[in-house]
Amino acid sequence: MVDVAAAAGVSRQTLYNEFGSKAGLARALIHRAADGYLAGVEQVLGASRATGDGPAELARWTVRAARADALVEALLTGVWGDRLPRPGDPSPGRRAHPAPPTPAELLALVRDRAVAVMGDRSLSRDRAELEIACETALRLAISYTLVPAYPGGQCAEPESCRPITPMITSEMDTSLSAETRSPRKIIP
Image (cartoon, rainbow, N blue to C red; front, side):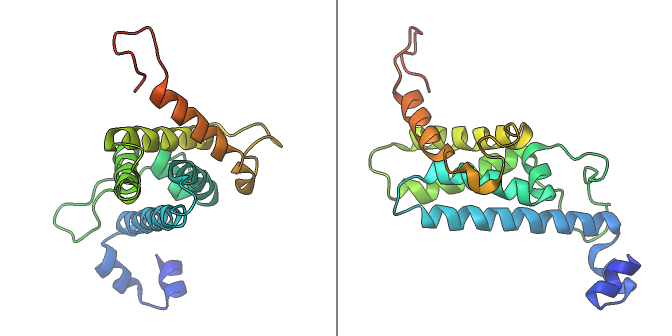
């Protein structure tokens, strides 16, 4: 905390008053990473209005954001590791940031934001189809985060994720309309 206080130009006591403990500071940093990721999601969705590739662009952004920030990767995957321990719950009686969202909660939050933005301008898909498309794109992006492609292959570098866009779009369109032999007839 001494080094953090010195770098921030405040006293150590000010940090403790604001965050309560090292764990409180860690939770604040995690929330900052989550807020940055969500702001990027909204920016990407806003920029994809012209192309109509919202789910694919969302997947590309998610892979890039997770590769660029270990906290975002941990938030999306739930894999915290030794050097990045899972944040604990806030101490009772202290003013602190709440526990960060679980990966499932974060995925649902991002999916719902994407559906809200894209649903306003999507006439060809109903809300349920759009939810499935967005969640599929996010889960595919998280799989690329958990198990990166072979070195030198697709998505070895964040900018090389561009080939994912047509693939995701094609797969989602196929999965939303494919006939099956199941009693449901349509793959959801």
